[in-house]
Length: 341
Image (cartoon, rainbow, N blue to C red):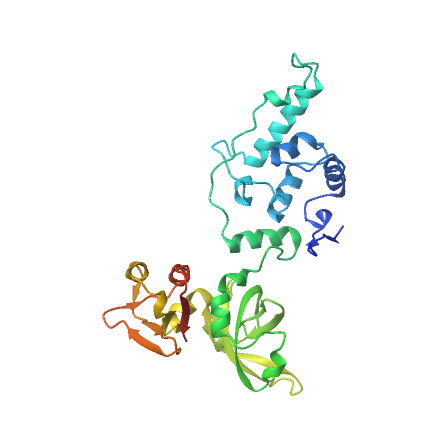
């Protein structure tokens, strides 16, 4: 069942995960009452393999149910070995081997069961899923995003280059809007004259909107309209020509969110007090900037005690704006990084 823990966090119901049956959940809960599971191997050797099968465990891993297990991330559970078996299958075989030996008459000299003699398999090394892939797989089995949202990666773009969202778009009647969103579904159709058009559902952090693209707009934007694409939409929220009592978003510009910083950012500023500037900090800034050469403005604002800045603009070289550059500069103590938009 869904519940709330002591920290006020909503706990997603295990039986609401696609591919996890009620029998599996019941068996897991009964076993968990005897003590929390330490890791995936502890789980597979304790639960009933007839009620908790490979599909159940895969869905639990994909949903993030095992995220509390230390030193292992979701992608590792799906690591594929040379024989095309997965790490989950290896963990299940380990659990079955332990149960088989414990059900036999083989005991150690001290009367202990022999599961301690079977070493746990080595956890494979593999790259973690990227945030977007992780969330997409999470939604496949839960129906919602739990650990985040695909637009979380674009907080910088949303803060600097948007002015609205779908939930409060009614406040922007007859006004230009700029909204960050993701394509949820695309339904391509043909009209009676054989011309293609599409109904597209887009979602931002809080809400969704259905958009229709016909003729020239369809041809202009169809390359952007693929499920999962994250976009910056610019347009006019205006009265519908089909129904004068309704308003609709007329899109007049569309960009991939990952291109926005480099395409629209005019430059960046570093803000700091002169007392915080020393040779070591200058060297760090220089090394970072040297690795991100580009054509955008780079300026340092050096403030005095009266909060009046001295401005130093790089004349020899500019920068290529990226999240990596902003992150690296932001890690230097007592420096504020600002975009010029």
